[in-house]
Image 1 (spheres, helix red, strand yellow):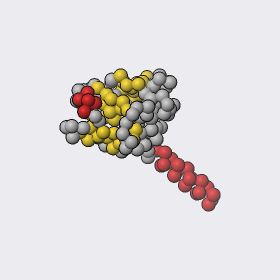
Image 2 (cartoon, rainbow, N blue to C red):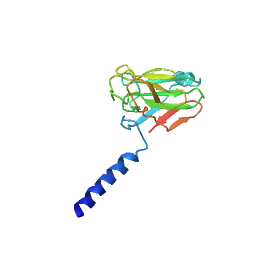
Image 3 (cartoon, rainbow, N blue to C red):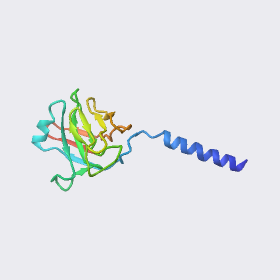
Length: 148
């Protein structure tokens, strides 16, 4: 009886642990700090535009680009969003998503994600999970800053 009780406790704990996740993506939550430049800020003032920050770029040493790089975008409603450029299907840091608003596409598996309204949900390809989104975005009127 005691063994059975321990078994059921472990199973119940596992079910609670895995069902209470508030984040469905498989991309690890990573540190982000990006502050836009003036030219990028001007581009992001228009809905349906994006600026990608990939690891192969030359950025200030204090920039943190998430797991696979980040993209800051303004969706169709004009709201700012930020997503990681790593595809949740293959989690490759070396092959960032390609952004062509309103979609982000994985060059490896062909997964396609909709950024129209800022959610990053899969709309095609192999991935069944949404993009890793970063939500702490500040628009000061001169710069856009993303901090996680």
